[in-house]
Image 1 (cartoon, rainbow, N blue to C red):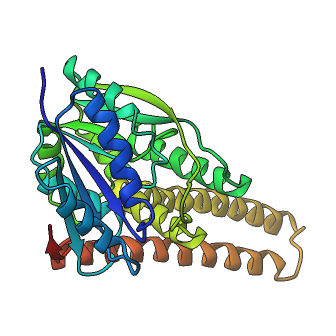
Image 2: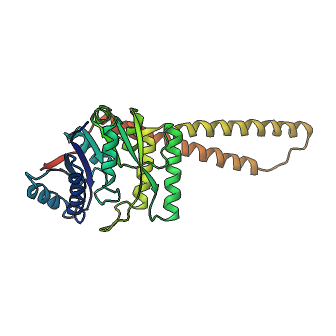
Image 3: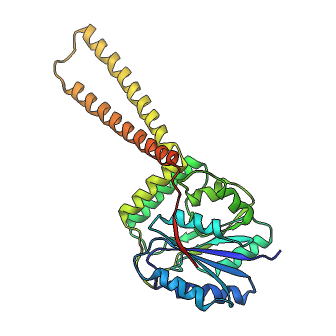
Length: 308
């Protein structure tokens, strides 16, 4: 089974990597006689990224298929991936980073597995490259929570995937605005396999993910794909109720035997604990209500200002 591969490359301030990624992917896929199209999505970059995409699309016209999509502003990587999937015309779609931290030679192995009948080929990380201990610990905690919430192993998940057109259509049919691509591509099912890869170091530029943006990304995706935090509210309530019952029995017992002590320490501590749990619970509920509000407004996930 042969088919055209659409390679989707989200780009945010990656002007130094556009030409480099095109050259690397083009050489590898041509050497293996794989027909392809490249779709670059400029996610509201403030540098020369869009001009570089236009230059590639114009100079390579007639030689290979290169398309460019330009957002009106920064909508985020999830939106960029969805836009790429929606505009892909290939029989199979691959999603990867244009900084080449996802090794392009793995596209060939993924394509060959697709030819064998696999609908979803997951790129899983053998290692996470050079990351700080705090970053690795945070990522491990996030994916552990996602694994518990979704019942899908997310421990080594990445955006580096190859999907059959049927899988792409299933993902695009999901109506929610707050998508989490890494989980959605597993949730839809289909025949799946994995390809291990080592995360490469960036040769040009710096990561666009700050610690705060990663925290916001984690919170958004946990809320978008699971109700686990809401279950925390229920568990906290049960624990507090159990503790209150035990303390009530103890207090009544001491009162009747005449050993009750005067003072407000216990009362103050209880008020602080219960008050804190109530405030955290209200915050979690408020966050979910905010996400419901965003869904109800039905604003577009992205706005395209230009295309090549």
